[in-house]
Length: 122
Ligand SMILES: [Ca+2]
Image 1 (cartoon, rainbow, N blue to C red):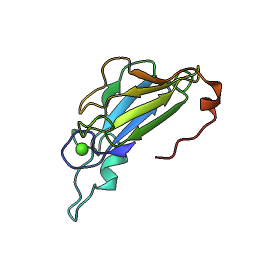
Image 2: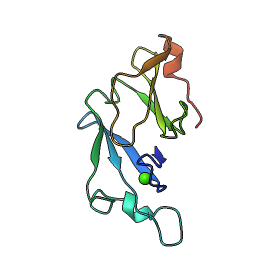
Image 3: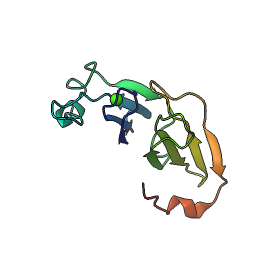
Image 4: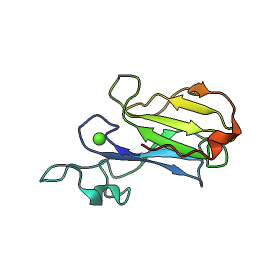
């Protein structure tokens, strides 16, 4: 997802790495004319802080959680949240954090294979 996760008003990037099986947070830098300097999201070295930070611990590989979607806050705390369709077809909600996700999320929809092929539209 590309939204302001850190809460400084500048768009950040949260992405999955199948190499590590983790989620990573890359913090954006404000552009002089407003918005985010897109180049700050291009590489870890260009980002705010100069490195990507672990956002979701292991278990986020595409085999375990095939589909992910980041959305604006659904729980009212203003921090963007993450929704996942797991390999068993269940849909889980992960409350966003400004620094790193904690906990195992909340099951919103029980196992149903057809959710594996449904595409959510942000
Ligand atoms: Ca930010």
